[in-house]
Image 1 (cartoon, one colour):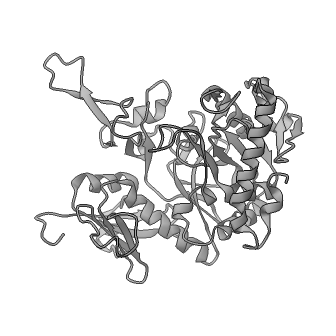
Image 2: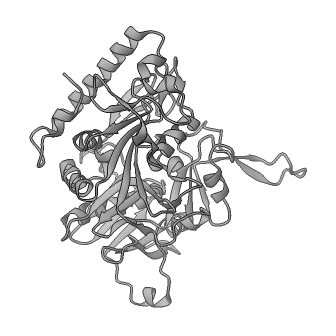
Length: 442
C-alpha cells in the first residue's frame, strides 16, 4: 500500500458504552470501503475526539493483495484475514467484501469483553426497545430474519447485528446497519428499503436501466437479480431508520429470541424455553440452508453455528453460554425459539412461514400475551409450545398437525433431533454446566 498515490484513513469507535468503547483505525486503498466503515462504526462527534485519537487497534485493508503462499501454509485460498493481538494490528488480503472490516472488530470484541472485569457478554444479535423501556434481543444466522424482525415500527431499533451486555444493560457495537437486499421491496421491508438514500451504500447489487428514463442514462438497483450472488447488501448509518434509539444503550433484556429457519419443517413457529434449554439452543445455533443460498446446496442442509456466530467467537463457546446463563438468571430474562422456516412439510413440499404469522409470534412475546396461552410439551425437544396465539393460525402452532403425512413428519423430526445430538457432543464436559440434558430425548 505504500506505493499507492492515495490511501484512506478512518478513526472511529466500536461500542456505544464509554466504559468498554474501543478506538479503531481503518486504513483502506478503496474509497468505497472507507465509506463502508464510516457508515458502520460510531463516528467521532467532536474535533477533540480526532485530535487526541490513539487507536486501540488498527486494520489495514489490502484487498488487492493476496497471500501467494496459502497452499504451503495449508490455508483454503489466497484470501487471508490475519490478526496480531500483541501488536494491535490486522491485515485483510484478497477480499473486497466490505463485511470483513466489521466482522474483524467484532471478533476482537468477542475476545476482549468476556475477559474484562467485570466480564461483559458480546453477542451476535439485533436489539430493540419498546416505548416502556423493555429490551429484546434477536439471535439468528443469516437468512433467519434477525434484521427484519428487529426493525419494528412500534419499537425503537438499538442495532441490527452486534451488541454487548454489561452491568448497565445492552449497548450497540456499531453505528450503522448491514442488511441483505435479496428480493427487497418497500412492501416486504419498508424500513430497510427507505433507508437506501444518500450515504447508504449498495454492495453486490445488480443495476439495470431505469425504464422511466427516456434517454437511457439512468440506472436503478434490481434487488431480484441474483445471477452473480444472493449476498446483495446495503450499509447505512443507523439514523436512516426513523425510529432508531438515539442513546444506542438500553436496559437489561426482558425477552431473548433465538431465530431459526428450519427448512425441514418440523420445529414449531414459536416455543418457550427453560433456562437450560435456552443455553442448549444458544450453543447449538441451528438453522438450515436451502437450495440456491449457497453453491452446491441441492436440498435442505442443517447448519449449527455455536452462539449463532461461531466464526467470530474467539473463546470457547461455553464461556459465552455461561455468561448468558448468569445474566438471564440475574435479570429474569425469558427465552423463546422462533422458526421462520417451513411449515406443512420440508422445503419443496411445505410453505415458508408467513411474515404475518412470524410477526404475530414476535408480538405475542414482546407484549407478554404468549404467557396467557396454555402450552403443550413437545415430545422430542421438551420445550413448551403454545396452543393458541392471537393472530396466528392455530393449525401451524403444532407443526405435526400441519403435515399431511404424519409418519414423514415423525421421521423428519427424529432425523433433526439426531443432528442436534451429534452436533452437541463437542460441548460435553466443557463449561460450568452440562447442557446436553436439555436437548432432544434420546
